[in-house]
Image (tube, each protein chain N blue to C red):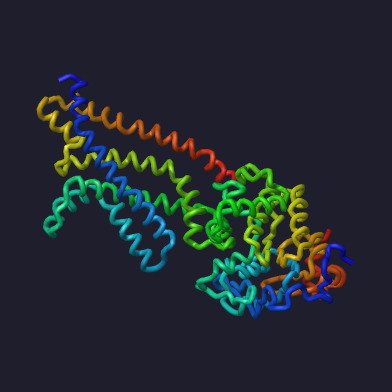
Length: 261
Length: 219
């Protein structure tokens, strides 16, 4: 059904036999009195590609921000690569190096060149030599097809180029999991494809990915499972074929009607 | 006494004016950076403490601080030279203002900047050092130059605690010459001669950093 998929998730449990990449159990989170996440349960196997969609304010960004602890949760467990995330834990920076994140607003460092954006954490967190870091950075910039822009500053690039640099910057840390928080929502329409192409290529390499996105073409093509969230809950969780073909929940159907015009 | 002679006489006090300014900056810059950063990151009682230290230096009249420290400290057995007291008081007063520029610049940064750094696995300290501070300091430069000029002008007050700076020299000459108009016009000119190059220097620095600041704005 899907030529892109290297392994069929229905029969193959992925390359790793150990613990899942992400285990979320009974996760609840409040912003003040407002409950953004309500008893969320989700397990992501190594190599699995998950797309999370849902109306704005449904908690999907908050959910993936809990996975690298940019947001602290109040109840439940978040276990990433076998380690439970807790407030105030000492080895959080080290854990985060295994989790790449791509933001809606790119969040490139404007005072650094593209190359320096990519090498900063390699040199300062992984204590690599500059030469070594540069080699890794150039390899990843080539991967997102933008090596010729290495010496430029982010403001000199288009939105699509900036987002590809942001992906390369995250890949430089050799993460085991990649989180994408609406990576194409801030882009002009003509730049969306170049970013999705990079993400698709990444998916084909077997990267474990969680993508919050409304790009349903991408979801259909790449995702192993699509998760629909509404009002802080996971409402629907199904492979693309079933998700688009025969969604169970009424809320999912209404949402799909609205975005698939 | 010719105008030129008056000006030359006033500039005999330049060494003290420059020395108090330079020492004052040595107090002002670290104080502004440390307390601005502490105020930005601290919470609860610690923040209240940091804020009260800043407010003490920022909200008291400099002349009162000068007298208080110069004349009261010896009563507590602490003997400091007029230069030491003058540069400390002026420096920390300006540093108090500076701390607010530092804090404002840190607060103005997009939260996504520190989040991106943290997500890459950098420590909180390295995020501050390599991501937030470089951008904040660039944004602060115009304010900072302004405050440096305020400091130079503020040094005129140390003439009140016996230091022979430019203002003190002018007062001496005025008493000898009975020519207050000539002498104090000369003093105005003298401060202009000292401060204007700093303004020009400030513009240069701003221009040099202009490129990267423009980048931040575009971003």
